[in-house]
Image (cartoon, rainbow, N blue to C red):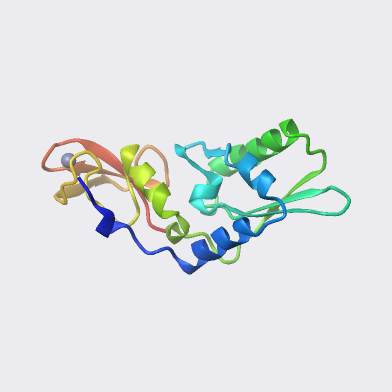
Length: 170
Ligand SMILES: [Zn+2]
């Protein structure tokens, strides 16, 4: 099933992020950080999600990673922070700082278009659609506001009867 028409426009923030990475002096470190996945959604990296905002290296060699948490109190953030330090340390970075950027607040608009597709292929409906990721049906119903994690809701498809998670809109 082709749904190329359903791909949402890239938000301004996402556009700015892509531009920043493309012009970064730390493009190699951005690539290293692609290994850091969301523990709750292992098909998406922190870059795909828009959590990773910037990577800068000072003349003294201090690597500063700027991240925006997906939502306040997300339990995955501690794991993500630890994973960032681990992959950068393995890459040979010694001084690593993590800076939390809370403003502007993260929204699901920051998800990359390709990330939305992979999310659906993983069986999780994206934030813009409650359509069933299995069969594409729009006849779906919310079963529970909280799915397998707090950032997802649980829905059920009325056509194929499969339950599925939907990434909540923030
Ligand atoms: Zn279905």
